[in-house]
Image (cartoon, rainbow, N blue to C red; front, side):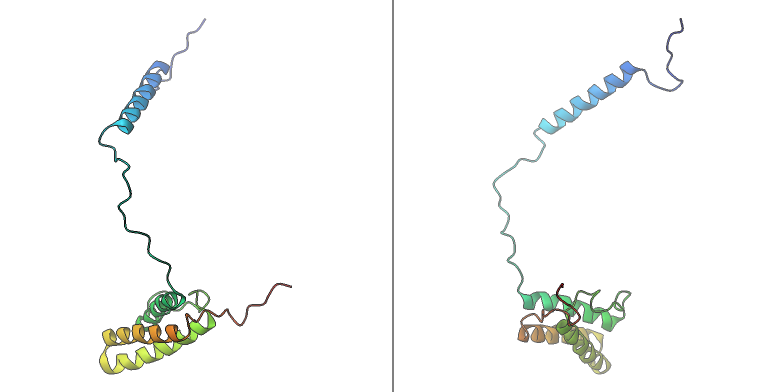
Length: 140
């Protein structure tokens, strides 16, 4: 009868069991150690209140208008890929045009500031400019 011999370099079953039990014991002790973070009463500030449609519009349109003015890698996406409604895209185009004119006379920094002000005003006037795409059709 031939006895089972482990392959060269393969640990025996008892070695594997010992290593596994040592690892489990170490994990159990670490989880119970006093250095583990304690759960305390929450002292965090409350979650921020939801943004208004005008704030969301301002953030989104201003971001993309500035990206377009700077000619960044993603500035060539179309309005749908940027997540803009038709109204927001119209604000975007007007803001980019105003920004380009400002850039020619006063420089890029002033143009970027103008875009922020321009977009904030238009988004507020149009309550977020969130009308759906004119291409959208209800399901039949």
